[in-house]
Image 1: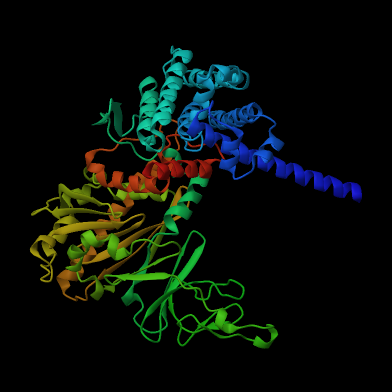
Image 2: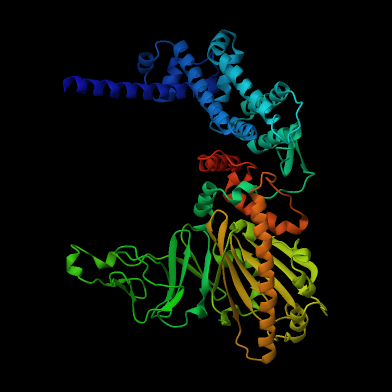
Length: 621
């Protein structure tokens, strides 16, 4: 036992010693960056570490030993970074080259406090031998890795061969070296975004078959920066993001749980106890009208054993909410009211076991909830379009058909991409094209919302439904003249749209199920109007729109199949797809990993996203 105890004490001492040596190495890095290699003293290092000179001497018996240990630590860190690059490029060398750019510009590797240390050892003749001894082999392995990545890249099918990998490697290594020199002189003011664009532009220049030119290219010219628009059109989200399980988990956490999701309309729940339920990505919720007339949202999870406390999409709880599993009963405001056999729950305090509430917002009569996070309200995000939408009197509308749900084997983004552009309008929807003018209004708001809108033709000739809809549609007096023959689609990113017509409207929601699968959910609402021509117009509008939906399903199913093909990585976007671009940029802002044209290696998608997000935060600082 004494021997075992002695070993534990010895191990603890070794760990403490290693931590203290690491602390001194970090202080030495800071001292070299501030004073230069020749002017570093043990006293300065000790002061930077908040220790005494004697403690420095205990761990490093000379300044030379401390400086050598500092260089060795930087070398080990760089070796680990290059190992990560090699792993990223193990299956796809292009991914390895992209990872190299990210690593070499990563604030943790290209730290303004660490970069001067490398140059200090190279510049001082007395330290140069130490540098060669510690880092000479590392430098050779670094260059060999870059050359090997280029060699393998140009051996791939579809990439033009004949390139000299050593020459390309020298070009990229030299470009990265020049950026490190800029860090040496500019310190924290160094613009990593410009450096990244330069390096990515180099890769796109030498291998356009694999790398895309950045959307905007900034080139330093002396003390100025020239910015010019890229010649190529913007590109879409990469194909891999439409079917990757690891990426889908990031969407769940960063896009959907913090987003506002529509549940229904206030007039779906007119009486106390009326409720509507909603499910998404493992979360269950319901909205219920209380005895005081207020709507509240709760997790649909009993606090006893997690059973759903309300069933179905819609219903009524007469006086209280009763879980059908064990009969736990809650007030309509969520408080726990009664527990069968309550005396068998030792020490139960019912006041602490009410239903868990969720954020709720009512916007123009429609009820939204969110499961996590904070941020702008629905009203704030849809503010650019509220004045127009207010003319339709959404708050006074009532449901005129049942809630509908349809599962389709396409990724939710694929479906949203389709609904947010009119480029396919003429070829994809001949019936709709017969009814509507070709010109669309297209608008994307920085708030994360968009608007598409187009006018009906004066005298459509093709298709029975189209001709009669235009003929029978009444002039709705509550609408301005401009809106009486216009169809408008307003979308709240990521997945909720209002399809607005003169005679009615519907909400349209794409609920993700998994990578490559989603549920289309929606309901139609209208102002009470029993005129014969109004009912006929609504019937014909439904016929037209259900045909459009069937056509969209066929289009997106075909696209989903193509997204899995080896022939496709990214697509191009026209000016007619400006709303798609705004939507996809909104996604990239939240998930920077969606900017990579190739999927990171399995098991690394979340880490790559964290690295890229951290780099962007650093740039904004």
